[in-house]
Image 1 (cartoon, rainbow, N blue to C red):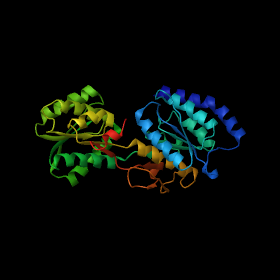
Image 2: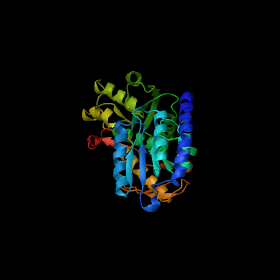
Image 3: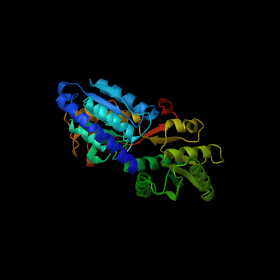
Image 4: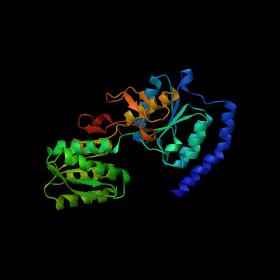
Length: 343
């Protein structure tokens, strides 16, 4: 990771002089909201990724809907070096805002600093950089919202009672551990007839997660449900359940992608699962860029703005601590809507 950071910063430094000269010649950044135009560029982790194709397609519709111009650029491989090159190019082009999902938290910072020095607004979404390197970050959800969503889903499927277990990623996974820490008190307060009997780790490896699922069901014969808040884990657990005697008897939910889980929803192994809606994330990131260009927000806690076109009824958003804007609760996928998504 350190090598990656070093390479990224060297690329940004080399490009820095040319960028500075270009911006100086141009006099100012273009594409601001002052002239009624919004020149917004989306930079996903990599092109050809169905998840970002969904978010960026929705973003394009949103940007064009409020009278802006949209472009999507990005590397073919999800690398920080590749993103640095595109950030430098967008800076030379003096776009109004760069909206990116970062491949590294710090390796992009020099390039983003150059962009911001040139007057370009920087929005991160899906994956953040160091908070000093961007104006705001659009987060898909929060640990509390994810935890409550996961417990509510499994409670609904097991009738609010019985033994449940968690199949997580790695034991040191910061995000999963934060979600589990939020799940425990919520489970105790809202579902006293449900009991968490085990937490196991599949290391975000398909076969390990599959084996852990099998072991869970052997160790806990009365298990009513499994929560797996990891895309690898929930898909592996579904694969095991779908061909076992426990299909239809042990409930399963978690955080998964529609393409991974479609088969198991169709065959009845899984009733519902969740993740954030990438289309909503793209739309909100677009309106966030617009709000920055309009100077409705600066990234300060308490700033508010509006967004339209989301799948929920929410239209008002507030900037939280550290410039974070939260989309909301995870989106629930089931047999009625899963075929509407392809990622």
